[in-house]
Amino acid sequence: MSEAQIKNLEEMFEQRIANDEKIEPKDWMPEKYRKTHIRQISQHAHSEIIGMLPEGNWISRAPSLRRKVALLAKVQDEAGHGLYLYSACETLGISRDELYEQLHSGKAKYSSIFNYPTITWADIGAIGWLVDGAAIINQVPLCNTSYGPYARAMIRVCKEESFHQRQGYEIMMTLAKGTPEQKEMAQDALNRWWWPSMMMFGPTDDMSTHTEQSMKWKLKRKTNDELRQQFVDQTVPQADLLGLKMPDSDLKWNEEKGRYDFGEIDWDEFWQVVKGHGPCNKERMAARVNAWEEGEWVRDAAMEYAKKQEAKKLNKAV
Amino acid sequence: MENKDLVQYIYGIADNALILGQRLSELCGHGPNLETDIALTNISLDLFGQTRSYFQYAAQLLGEDKTEDDVAFLRTERQYKNVLLVEQPNTNFAYTIARQFLFDVFHLSLLENLQNSSDATLNAIAKKSIKEVSYHLRFSGDWVKRLGDGTEISKQKIQEAVNALWRYTDELFHLTEADKVAVEGRIGVDTSQLKDAYYEKVEELLQEATLTIPEEKYFQKGGKQGVHTEHMGYLLADMQYMQRAYPNMKW
Ligand SMILES: [Fe+2]
Ligand SMILES: [Fe+2]
Ligand SMILES: [Fe+2]
Image (cartoon, rainbow over all chains, first blue to last red; front, side):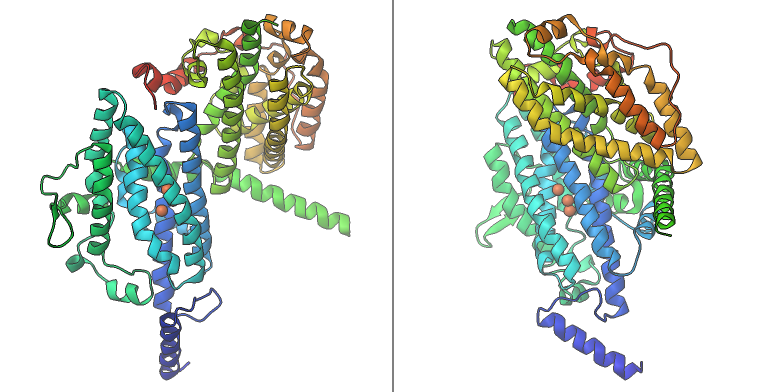
């Protein structure tokens, strides 16, 4: 193809997206579009899978049968999200093994929030409320993103995430209305999870790269700072309802702007965790790599067995 | 049948579901691939669902405002009546599968009989659980075959797991005092009658999986009397942690 032809294709492609048409796996797409989507969708898939670990940490210790079943089902949902997202990513011409390889080698990133430890039961409530809550704000716009398989996966994912968020908030409510010890546990979890949740929206707009391109492809609709503001405005009244205090002394309602003002995020901490030096980065990676390596002989056996069965069938047919 | 005996009979069935569910739930997020992870979690969820039905019934029989959680979390180790098989650890995927398979074959035939119980509640729980447990058995049986007739390594691992767990199978067919009373009252299942069919079915599948039938002469027992293996205390410490550390609270 000549350069002019490619240019022409690109223009048509951008036009289709501008017209709100979906791009499907078999359609022509610019290489940069493919690469950007592989990166973003796989990052998202990895986040779902790594995200199973901090919450999985409390399944065996959940305080009641009802909570245990709900948590187990939630963590299982996250595995399901990982599965849809890996499948969506595979439609862009990359295999699941390659994607895992990128995760395990540290080449691919995942959401930093899962590098914080879950140290009390209230953390399970706080994660559902805040982390799933922030994820929904980040992800709802993706239900209309330009790449068809991704948009369709996100519709299913978002439905389940809002269920997780309600469930998390309900855990917090039960604790907040419980004994002083329980309320203290809830407050402590909020104190520890609030700022990392705020960091889930990424660097401030002036620091953030490739936003314009992402807007065009509908990987983004609002900027990081706009989304973060939306999260604060939505969450503060929920904390009030719980009777818990936000760990931010600068937080106050701005009558004039009709929104909350809030304090400065600790960006040193943000970058430290992103670069792999958060409290649990090493543990999370080790757990994934370990599950993968320990599982190798199992996957090999399944493949070998399937081959033998296939051969048997052929033999019979002959 | 007196309530206290019926409760003991229920523990003998439900504690198996609880403890095996707990063991499987430890694996969530650590499976050999996503599909298997999800499937094992499904089995765990089914078993906890069954546990809750049994324990809600037991709590009702116990009266005094007892709840399913009191029954699940607030007994001492000696009061849990599960068989030793289900409390054995997730040593590796082969052990998890072998434990599941050896239990599922028994579990299905227990429920097939329990659905004729003269106790309406047990009979209904059994009917509801049969479908789930047939699926569990299909899953574990298929994996025994895959591992047995897969690679050299997988064959060796699953054979080792079956050999190691075989000594816990005989206990499945022992009758406790509560069992005997329940059988007399046409409420319970005489599991000693299920033994021959069990070994026949298990051995048939092991053969299909190209595995050797273990020649174990010595069997272990005690779980049904509440005398457990050393693994059990740690499992309970984990499971009961919140209820013990923060007593009398709502969660
Ligand atoms: Fe997510
Ligand atoms: Fe998710
Ligand atoms: Fe979620």
